[in-house]
Length: 458
Image (cartoon, rainbow, N blue to C red; front, side):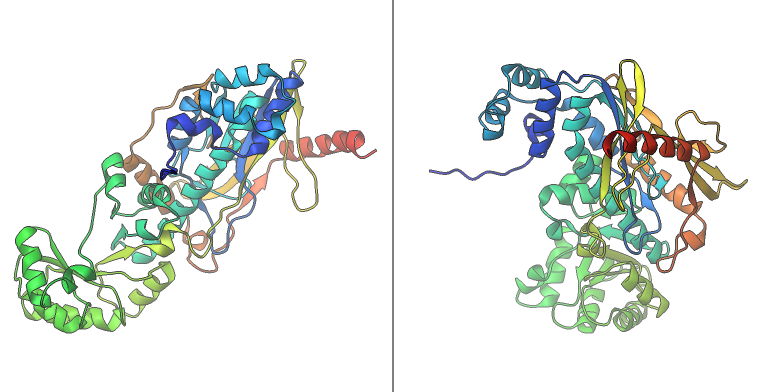
């Protein structure tokens, strides 16, 4: 009889959370005795629609992965029995059994703003190692960076009002819900409805009640009083189950201990004004009005422009799926390879997908107030003014970086956004932030392309 499976990731499964072709290439490198160091860079080629910047997120999970990845005996047995590996030597499977990551990693720390083409992570390690880890790195960085960026836009639209992540039930699975809660907090949210995320990350857990609570009692008033009996110091009531304005009057009967009311449907602008009037008439000016229901940055911006009297927003589906731009499209490309003690530039120049060779650094120029002016993507060690953004986070397989708390990461994001000039941050029609390639990098690209074309195009 089949038993149900959770399909949750465990440390035992980290090695095989990858695409098959990573392992077939790894087997090929092993067979060809290719153990020289290769450097890959992870970057986003094009920003998604309505995105003028990225908030970097996911690095902590990447570092956990790199320090814990292994192939269990059962995983190696499974790989060995795949048809693709019929002719692969036993030595490769012994290699997998003893696999550890031994490389060096540079990265832009989480919470920093980055732009298209800028390397977010740079990995140097024996080429087998750099290949095996690609899938996990892309999946982790793409998703969390996408959600952190989306959340920052929602928070920006809310204009200093509280924003809570309500999205777990609409996320693409429970694991995605946890990661989205983390990324949303980095992007500026004040808390999450996800209890596990709050437990693991130490961020505020926030929640009210559902319509089912109200419907489970004989009448709305009774449901409100009974909830208040259990939670006298934290009573926020959902008031739109039957009639929002009547619900507001029923909620007001709780008196001064009432903390908030939530509206989940209808004309939120008009209803918030009417509810505010009801509450204020009863002397409940302190009671917060929470709005939810398919909200996003554009709708929140529109509500506030129309004068909605909303104190807090619960945002779910639109934020934790980045609904308007659900896939970030980050890529991970070979840029340099050591061979006989020499560093060989690597690049591709297929149509519309040209990449730049060599290890790179991002140099950011700021004005006297710290406001961002321009980024230059240059060669590592190139004499360029500006602040280098990529820093060493791992050397020889060991973390060499003090991991910030999630609150520190959130502050980094907030500080970065505060120094991104308004024309580059607008929700709509934002200007493209200036990112240029250095002269040294352009020269290397031209030289590498000439050499590679002479080898591969004849």
